Length: 259
Image (cartoon, rainbow, N blue to C red; front, side, top):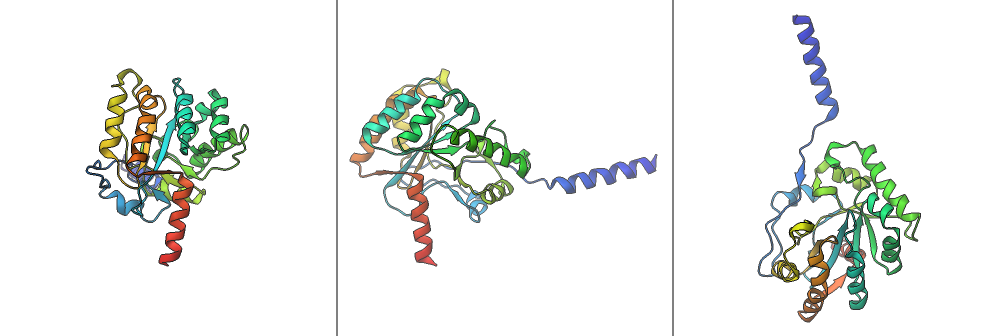
């Protein structure tokens, strides 16, 4: 019996060593108030060594609109209409399901010069996967988008569910991606619990701060109805809407000056 127990213990130890278990984190922060940046606590140290953004730290009143698209609820074209009217760029993080089901909307995003970001093909938890599995998830979305638009590559990824660890940040960076989290969001994705456009407007205005990366879900009717008012009011307050490419270039220029 001892012989079998020893063998089992050795097998368990070997398995644990091989899997190299790393703690998983869910992106979160203390919400912004009084136009100040949110506090992200321990995550600041975790993300510091990787290609990761959650806001623009360069103090200007620039803000960045991003949307997550997992499935269509009938409001994305309304959102695109507002962005076109107001001449505002955005990034749409799409899943494989969305690309398959809504090719015409994907084409419109690209045609109107919005960035299409990678939200994985099947929306899995990256922290439970190997590097090869993550690469496959991202590659499938890249190929699906490239097959129907002129966007042949992707450089921004939003980890599904906001779940990450140092290993997944390292791997996605090695795969050529910049991870994009956010500094402003609220519970807007429950389609059967919408609270009205005024609620969406208030949530954004209460949390807004210079350099905000705003996460919205296009399944929200509230967001679609509030978006024009949000954009117009923020413009009145001196904010400028920029693309994630602007943020990346700004950071590269800043690093060149600093170093």
